[in-house]
Image (cartoon, rainbow, N blue to C red; front, side):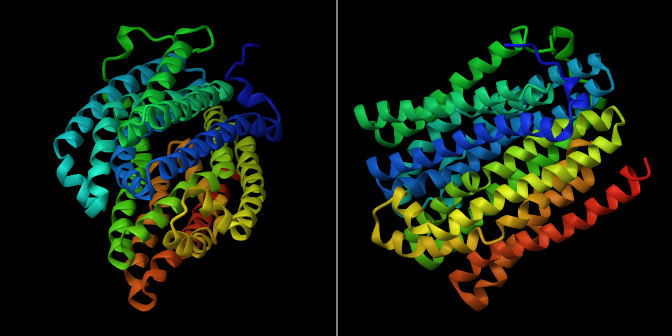
Amino acid sequence: MAKVSSQDLVYEPIGKLLIKQAVPASIGILVMSLNILVDTIFVGNWIGSTAIAAINVVLPVSFFIAALGMAIGVGGSSIISRALGANNTEKALKVFGNQITLTFLFTVTFAIFGLYFVDTLIPAFGGKGNIFAPAKIYYEIILYGVPILGFVMMGNNVIRAEGKPKFAMYAMLIPSVGNLLFDYIFINIFDYGMAGAAWATTGSYIVSFLFILWYFLSEHSELKIDRSHFGLDKPIVSEIGALGFVTLSRQAVVSVTFLLVNNALYGFGGETSVTAYAIVGRMSMFALFPVFGITQGFIPIAGYNYGAEKFNRVKEVIFTAIKYATVLAIIVFAILMIFPEVITKLFTTDADVLAITPTNMRWAFAAIPILALQLIGAAYFQAIGKALPALILTLTRQAIFFIPLMYILPLFFGELGIWIAFPISDLLSTIVTYYFLRREIRLKLDIA
């Protein structure tokens, strides 16, 4: 494979560069999303629909702990991209070493904490009634592998910051394929049930970690650290923390949203409504995979060029990314609006779930076409190191708008109010993001 330099981020044409960065990211996210979908289909058909709800209950806790690694990865990678753009290699190395130390300390600590309070956390996140027992089995095994997932999420972002999207894609493809293979072996052949599903997922984390470790030890990585880089440096930790807090807040809000929606829906429709939300939740990453791919491809380009003070290129990549992502989002939107019944039948044969999920899916994804601007706008501020606006824009969609709406609207519309809160919050957060992004372009990029 030809050696790729991070300096390509500042020289190649923006359109070509964005495609080069975004396509591997999109493929990786697509395969990971398909993995989640197929995994859910396997669990639903081989174990039962209650097992789908059980996994959905566990996800907020495991995702939050894994998000610690992602937050450290995204925050540090923003610094690494700008440091490499400014030819400050030593700072990039120190940041990477600090990322490894922080990821280990935080993920292990929170995993221990999560295991200790297992019987409290599962019911709090909606794991009640028949859901509790399978959820506990899945939860305890998954948390053993969550620190490894934290390192995978951190390392993947650093690989992308180096301008190596293909290797970042491989790091997502390997565990996705591995998880499906392990699913078949542990669930279908050995009949381990929920434990088999959990060990399949944990095993896939380990495989991905080994690949990422190989990458950083190989000649492909420009970041060759030594022991001196692992010692925590207060200014670097502060900068990683400020930017990483944006990602962590987003993931924390996702976890809280799962908790609140699971409990609210359980009050309206019991296990059936919780299962419907689990299916819609599985579809959300799949539905948005093109937009997430463009966003991940956009971040290192924007950060590197901002560090190199190539502000015209920064502005160009903003507009190009929004245009590409919006077109792809419209295509996905059309598929979801036309085929929700077909999609639902892939997950379950439960007549009650089949009756309510398609309509709810249409409501949940009604605003996808406009969401590209919101996601890329928030990502821009994180890429250039402006933590406060990035945090505000990240929280608008769910914390500021969705959570209040999911309590207010059911007072007038019942359970439907929870589902229509999704598109309304998407619309409001996009309007706010447009204001901030337009102001930034006018006052910073145009003047520069």
